[in-house]
Image 1 (cartoon, one colour):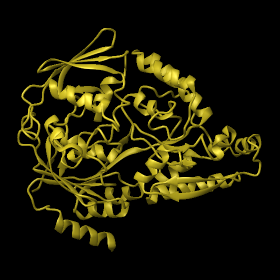
Image 2 (cartoon, one colour):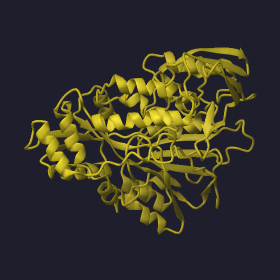
Image 3 (cartoon, rainbow, N blue to C red):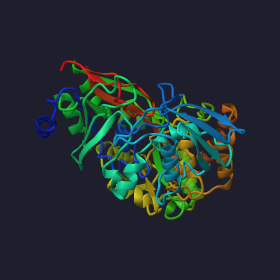
Image 4 (cartoon, rainbow, N blue to C red):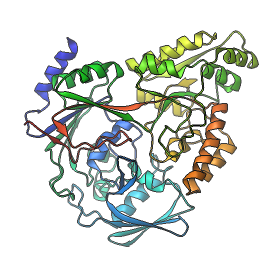
Length: 495
C-alpha cells in the first residue's frame, strides 16, 4: 500500500500533464552533474542529455561522430586531428568551437580534483588549428583514446558558464545537448527542457525530461506500474515478471559491459594474507549467485571483461566453488579454523541479499563475514582511503577494455580499492594501451586476468545485464550496451 500511495502522490506532483513529458525513475539521486567531478553511473544518465560528446557509441559499441564529424590519426598513433561540427551553440548561446574543445580537455586533465585527469593523462598538448579543427598530441600511442572521449572526458561544457559560475557550475550545468537544465530538487527531481536550437534537425521530440530518484526497488517499480513514470532503470530481477505481465509495459534487457564483485584490502586486515584471500574466493559459487539473487539474469564472471567485448578470453575458466581448496588455503594461511572479516556494502535489498549469500557460503568453510551497510558516497570515500577490509563495489563498464581495468588494479590508481600493487601487471597494462592490434591487446589482457585471478585484489563474481522497464508508448530510445539511456530521439505516443 505504501508504494502505491507514493506513486499516486508523485503523479500529482510530477507535472505529467504537460505534453510530451517523459519521467524517468532512477535508482539514486545523481551526485554530480559536472562531468569533471562525476564518478557515478547514475550521473551519466542525466549528463548524456545535457552534454554532447566529441564522439559517441552505437548499438555495437563502435565509435561514431557526434560533435566531432571526423578525425584522423597521425604520427604513429600519437596525434589525433578532429574536425568539428559547425554552427553548434551551447545552451547559454555561446559558440562551440575548437577553443571550447581545448578548454574542456585542458580543464579535465589539469584541474585539481578532476576525476578525468587519469583518463587524459597521456595528452601532451591540445592545439587550436582553426575554429573547426583541433589537434591533440599524446605522449605515446594510446589505443583507448577515442573510447574515452565517448564518455565524460569527451563531454563538452560551456567555457563561459564554467568561468562565470565556478564551483556552482555543477548545480547549473550548460552543454550543447538535446536538453537544457531547468531545475534540481535534491532527492526529488531533476528537470530538463527541450533544446529548441539543437544541431540535429527535428530533435529532440519530447518537450521535457524529468528524472526522479527511487533507491527502493519496490517504489521504483510501483511508479512504473501505476504510470507515474514512463521508464525505470535498473529493474530488480524480482520485478521483471510484474512488468512483463502488464500489457502497457515492456522490459528491455541486454548484456552490459560492466562487472560486480568484491574488493579485498591488501594493506590491512586478514586479506594481507594471499592464502586467506584465495580461501574466501574459493567459497563463492557464481552459479548460485546468479540463480538465487538474480533469477538467471546475471552472467558468472572470469574477470573484468564480459563476453562479447574485445578482451574477453573464453579459454580462461570461470572459477568454481571449491570448499576443499578453501580449507587447504586456510591451513596454508595459518588459520585452519577460519577467520572473520567485515564486508561493507551500500544500502539496498539486492546488495543485502547478495552479502548474505556470500556470508552463508563462506561460513561453510569456517569464514565468518560481518556485514556493514554504509551510504554509497561514504562507502566510496572510505574505500578510496583503504579503510575497509572488503567492499562490494562494481563497475558500470567501458567500451574499451582499458576502462575496465587500468584505474583499478594499477599501483596507486584512483579506483584501486585494494591497495594492490604488482609491477608486472602495471607493465602489461601500459603495453596494452600502446598496442593497436586487437589480437595483441587481447593477449596482454589475458595475461593480466590470469595474474589477478591468482593475486585477488578483486573477486569478479558476475556481469549484470542492463534492465529497463518502460511504457509501450515510449519509443525511439536506442539499446546501447553502456546502459545509458539516450532520449534525443524519444517520443511518447498517445498524448
